[in-house]
Structure formats: C-alpha cells, structure tokens
Image 1: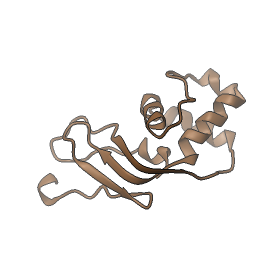
Image 2: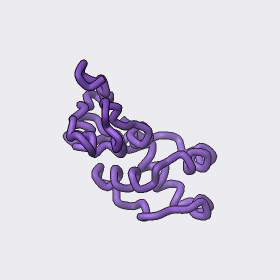
Image 3: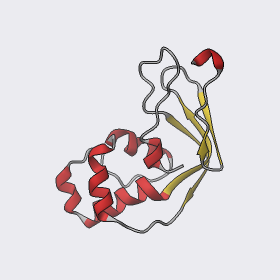
Length: 122
C-alpha cells in the first residue's frame, strides 16, 4: 500500500468522528521504483494532507520531508523527488492501520489494506 493510498483512507466505523489519519504499524515495508512525474505531484499536492504524509513517511523510515510545505516548494526538484519517494515509492507490505479514535486494527497483507467492518461496526 502506497502512502498515497494511506492519505486517502479513514476509519468508517459507526460513531467515529475522528477516523483520520490511520496510524501505521509496520511489520514489513518495501520500496518500489516508480517513474518520476512532476506534473502528477503538482496536481496531487493540494489533495494531500501534509502532516499525515510526513508522519506516515517517518514511521516507514523516511524522514526527508519538511514538517510544513506550501506550493512554492513545488519549484524545487529536491522537494519534488522527496515528495515522489514518500508518496509513491514507500509501500506498507505487511502490518496494520489503526483507527485513532477506537484503536481498531485494519490488517495490511501483501500491500492490501482490509478495511471491511464487522457487523456491529456498520
């Protein structure tokens, strides 16, 4: 699971008001090389919750993103390459996503998060 995906997921358990961002528990993380596309990154920048991405990338072992970012940084090739690496090349292969409100763990196996809810959570 890419951190791009993580940045879009939230806990939808009935009654949860603060299900984002899901905390990452890493058992196995991998890196997969992806072609660099600056235009894609520039378009995605406004859709990304920056703090959630920074926190997730640090949990995954990548600490090269600044704490805060603004659109002027999109002119920097170094910034774009670090953004690209964190967003698209870091993958949670095995582990879990944890709801910040309930502590409910959603397993991630072979890079696929299982966000299915139990009957009493719907």
